[in-house]
Image 1 (cartoon, rainbow, N blue to C red):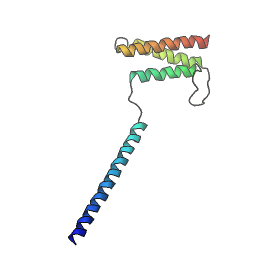
Image 2: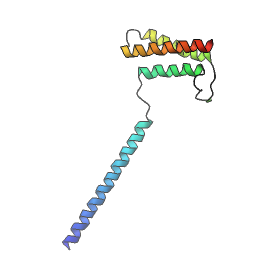
Image 3: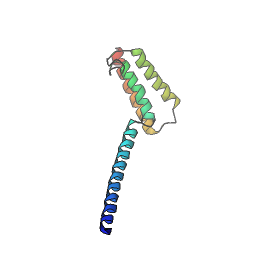
Image 4: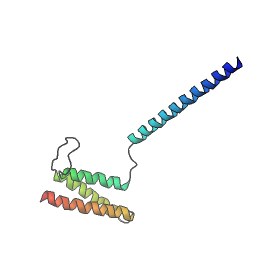
Length: 119
């Protein structure tokens, strides 16, 4: 009879261990889903990219997110480019080399595209 009790205890342990493994796996899945729905950490490149995207939408190079249509609104593009230029002026001497190069390249590209769109 002692053997039956030992087997029952052993089986209960296996069931609890399996349930715990499933719970841990579910918790990890939940954590991954939660992390993927979180917005990215703010950074300088993200800010620059955001304004660059607004400029490109204004130039009709990307569809507007609300209408899903490509529409040219040069005043919106100019505002975004001017904002990036202001950011460049205000952060002069405070950017890393990579940040400065990125902002310079983005502004150069946007200005050429703007001239082409306004042309």
